[in-house]
Length: 201
Image (cartoon, rainbow, N blue to C red; front, top):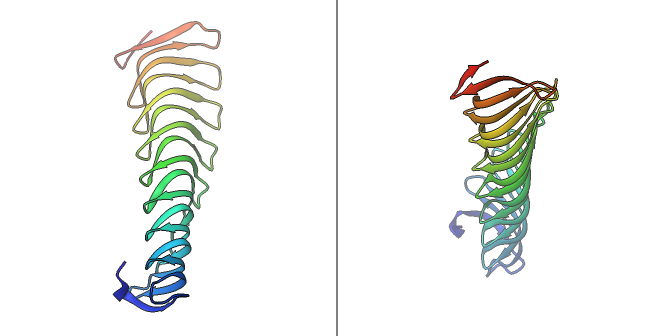
């Protein structure tokens, strides 16, 4: 933080930048909250000229601790921050009704989490760098379900897809397509197979 950027400031102890203070920067950024040794530290609110806002805990001039970040497009993150980025347990919601609840690392979904969409689709499982990645379960409004491995947002690896009528597709998936799969009817009878992506009766 460059102290020379300030346009106006009020501190309880002005000479050290301690206590509660307000800053308005030349670029229009605003901070109001607690300070320590001239840095944002404690509870505060940082507002950008375009309307984006962070409200929560700060440490050594960074978002750090529990807080809420709101984007100008209406998206909102509520949860843990560390060193200025989402880290820990948190929830992201969007104006269209989509929601992610789970673990974050370095500003992206990483670890165990849940995504629900406004149309009723749901994913529960592992994430890596913001993508579905690892073991997970997809459920859809029509009653179909996939349980198994996911890579870069697609069904990839061992998994089972179950249709709303009880049919099952069990085996290896590749890039969201049947690869080495056995198809069963609702009574458990084999009705088809895929070998290296080619369907055989």
